[in-house]
Image (cartoon, rainbow, N blue to C red; front, side, top):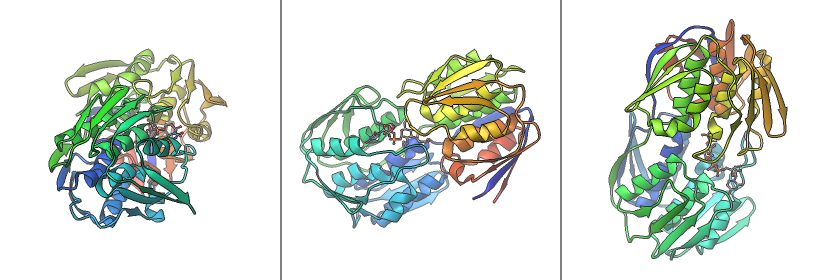
Length: 417
Ligand code: EPZ
């Protein structure tokens, strides 16, 4: 399972480069199946979720080769439209292959993805959307079997701007014979990255990043090279690391516009943020101040993936911070672990009330999910004494070289496998 052992209260300095976005790389790698020709994806992070996706690509018959951050995917000879239960369980977000397989093969067979640590993660919106587009779906014995000839387009109104469902609709309709319109689409930057990749392959997608997305189906897609955008959640994590250690750090190779939803929380806490091109410079005060209530919302609202990370910041901020988790029903699992470190947090339904303390105390804590694990690392950086974060396999899903990067900034953090 692995552990991070952190000696807290070391000031950080210097700059850190942010790697490619996990939540952009996953749908773009899946989209290579719909392209049906060799594609080269650059700036792909080295993460366990990426490894799981590569396993799925190879199980479908794709030729996949990796060289550092570059992944070559040739799906011209895929031989299957079936993803096994084992592979689906490795990574529930593999549901994103549904749309891609429908585009490539007119069918998809996969096991119903289980829930995960932060919630039930139903796929009803995905399936409702596919049916709206004319896909025949049968579910039995935990298996979902989807068949469709060449889709003819249509209009899908999403009851909730689901990121994955928006991506699946785009992928299913990119080679349809008609026009597909998504109303109330997710507006996350990862949707824009996926659309830009597909358009670089000859797709005709407009409105990505807005609430209405229009996909004009094309006959075929072509080979392309594409660089994944930077990971905005990882960037926020390094900003939080600087904030809780009273440090000044430069976060490099980011798209600052993607982090606007979190800037105000850091500034209210007393941090100074300067943006210049692809760099964010964050200067932090000796003592943070509590900040205005955080309400997690679909983009461009406050991202749910930053909720746990910002809770760690609030734990040592002077005053009371309220945090509402509106997206996932079980995303406060880091609270018990932070309380073991001396944090004063009270949870009632979707609201956490954080009463900032002067110092957290280092101890053994367990990662319960990806972002909770990252939040515990941030807490360990400012805690008195030694913090051991256990079960860091969760963190490996979304953070490439976290310990190396924090060490380069001056933190004392060691990985123990
Ligand atoms: C994506 O998950 C991200 N994962 C998540 O990041 C992120 O937290 C989430 O979007 C919200 O921004 C990837 O991109 C791989 P949703 P996704 O569909 O697509 C409910 C991380 O830490 N819902 O927008 O699954 C769902 O239960 C991960 O990197 C349905 O009810 O998110 C949730 O409450 C965690 N039915 C809400 O919508 C559905 O059919 C948001 O889900 C689909 C979703």
